[in-house]
Image (tube, rainbow, N blue to C red):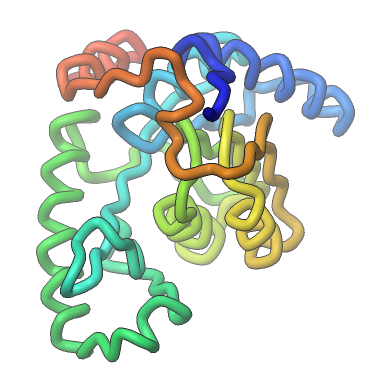
Length: 227
């Protein structure tokens, strides 16, 4: 029987902020004015709301969509970013012999889904504040396979040229965290708990109710977005 670690996302965010404050102080980054918090919808936006508020930082969202395997949409073999950039998990793709035509079709579909969500959640497909040269704090309510957060991180580093990237989540499996640390050398990865066996993020929350689109919009409006 796996143990509950967090009461809900608010509890997880409060604990994550405590860790982040110590982390930033140790790096002599006591001012958060240059920090932009990027949250992954939908659950990550609840985390991002609290983190950005307590750090007095700007909140924005980053939307990526996973590419599911042809025979099992729930099994992620990669993820797509707003500009069509995509990251494949070659270890997953290779044994499945996934055709390139399938990947291309999925990328086109996912970009349309991403554009819809960007408009729905923030009122624009464009990032008004350039991310280049910024210190980015990328947050979510947990990591499972890591495909979504990895694609977001690599997009921020290679396409948006952010100055510094910090990934911060409440919970994730150790093997995935190790993989992310290996692929994102020179970037900071903060995970409060890495319980084993892992199975699913929601197992470690007492309350892990689905976050609605309306809740995300409400949060983003409070942070100044015209939706």
